[in-house]
Amino acid sequence: MKDLDIYLSPLGIDNWESPDEGSKWKDHVSVYTETFPDLANVKIAIIAVKEIRGSEFDSSDNPMDVDSIRKYLSHLEWYEHFPQVADLGDILPGNELADTYFALQTVIQELVKRDIIPIVIGGSQDLTYAQYKGYESLEQLVNLVTIDYKIDIGEVEDEMNSGNYISSIISHQPNFLFNYSNLGHQTYFNSEKKLRLISKMFFEALRLGEISQDVKFSEPLIRNADLVSFDLKSIKSYYLPGNILPMPNGIDGEQACQIMWYAGLSDKLSSIGLYGFNNDEKSIGAQLIAQMIWYFVEGYANRKEDYPKSNLKKYLKYTIQINDSEHELVFYKSPKSDRWWVEIPYPDGKEARYFRHLIVPCSYEDYQLASSGEMPDIWWQTYQKLI
Image (cartoon, rainbow, N blue to C red; front, side, top):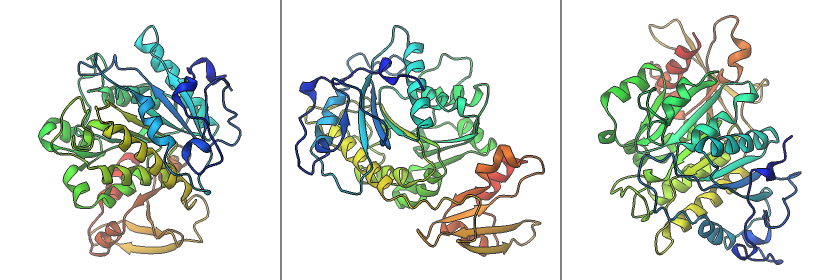
């Protein structure tokens, strides 16, 4: 294991209130001020990355002010069943942008290996590329979910930035991306060509309208993610007034917190990034981000540990034969959480590489759709990636 403190800068003592015997966040979170925290029992680690050189926007006057988020977090309530959390300080911009990427990649890699979930506060969203590369040495396929008003795909030959970094992830070699999903895109910001490409690659794109109708539609996709990247510009400016790109439409504050709760609840998720933070004069945005992080931790504290692995005998099993199809669909329902999964058959010889993706999270609505004789999209798209 590498020494992480060589990549991280401690918080100034003046930026963090001294703990006491109370019930607030500050009284229970280990903070890197003078000495690096003991990570032996830590489950979640907060890291700020003050890097904006990869932004597609002019961010030279970005009042990132991550310490304001920490300030509001410190006064939120702490509950006895919460996991141990550490704030590991900041990754400062390196001499070159690539240096910052390498530092974040290394920190992500080491924390994930220790079963510690990093919460990254950025910084421009191209940092997701470094977050993704942190999984390269794990030698397993991963699923990426982004929450974004637009799908950040561009031309592969273009220099990578926060507006096209997904192309770099898709084209990266070795390729270890199994699935990509975007939640909350606003169609008028996305070309038909881009949406056709997502469909052609059997990836998912959930429109803002679907999330606005019911945020629960996002839960199965989040439950299937190994890493999540949340573009804070996808949140309405009413809730995040400091957004560099004012957004009259978007995800609202309550939905953002619900999405974070789903992410924390997922047994599979192992890192999450919140990118594009700009503070505002009244620190409304900082308060919202603090509450989003709080909900992630509460979600983690409520994990059911019911992600299906080898033993499915404890699950309720439902088998459906789709009309005019050779495929029999097998659904599983967890008696612990009432959540649903669907089994995907795989070609001979591919079990080892794709094992983690044979049982795929789905919704009760997917089961109802199959019961009516229709093939759920989640089944078909996953199956196409396996053949």
